[in-house]
Image (cartoon, rainbow, N blue to C red):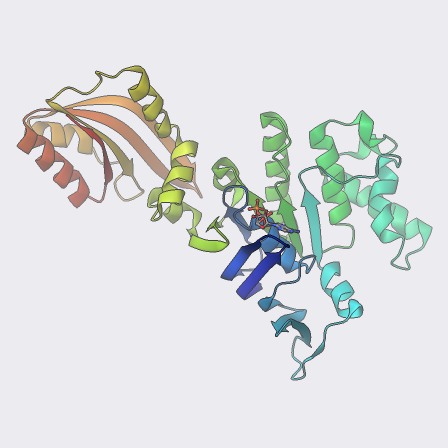
Length: 360
Ligand code: ADP
């Protein structure tokens, strides 16, 4: 478990103050894949870097179960080992012990270009007092884990982006951490490599019970592997929840925007732009989201018969999120105004989330 409580961080420069984190609290359970999304500048990197204390918060606390907690009071950092009553001033020794349990991967891999794959992975192990043979054994084990055994003697320049990220993952896991922090790890990769790295992360999460905190600007990444998600805007967490709940019923405007871009239904805005006469005075264009409780009900034909309206399907999508179906349709409803409204009310009564895009 990782618990971040009331974290704040302000960057002060001669001409401005940036509130990168404003009273942020989140809790990540052990074994979870936890996504943090937001646009550039929202505070995601700052937040994730506070977890391993690469960034020192101005206030708040970071607790990692099995290890201890760091609390910042009046700018001074204190450490309390788990189970201990006493709080002491934080030292490098405490940080070393904390970071041993936290691996981190980055968008641009951060590999040593002049070292082979073997040496890149062996590097963090060299300072742990292990002998050569035990390092060799561990490196080969890690290479097998990330499915890159055949590249042991290659240099980073000879690898694809996806392979470089595999090396970085192996290196991050060298000291057997229980937590992996991922800072936009797939943002520099093509779609195929992205998919394979996400699959690897999910496999490692299951196989090693590895807790993963990942930051991304792509909802598709969240959809693919996260259990929970926090949405950040202007240094705050504005929405947080189980991935299915957030995708099926986003509460904040920014979350709706993120969810919309990833579902394919957002393409309706392009269609509207291209076809200005798409909706006539007898039509209403609506977006419907059918969550698990109504995804298999014949609601569209039912509504059509009941209220004497035509339902014309423009766009549709069904996705499986966390093993549950989430369906979406963009429909043009044609008919008398009162019938169209009655149809929309009926859908809403049946727990379909209806958004009116355009009224004719
Ligand atoms: P994100 O990861 O969501 O893009 P960041 O955490 O990197 O956001 O940045 C949050 C805000 O803090 C941004 O406005 C950024 O410019 C600012 N910021 C981040 N790091 C620094 C720094 N070292 N010095 C000054 N400002 C910073």
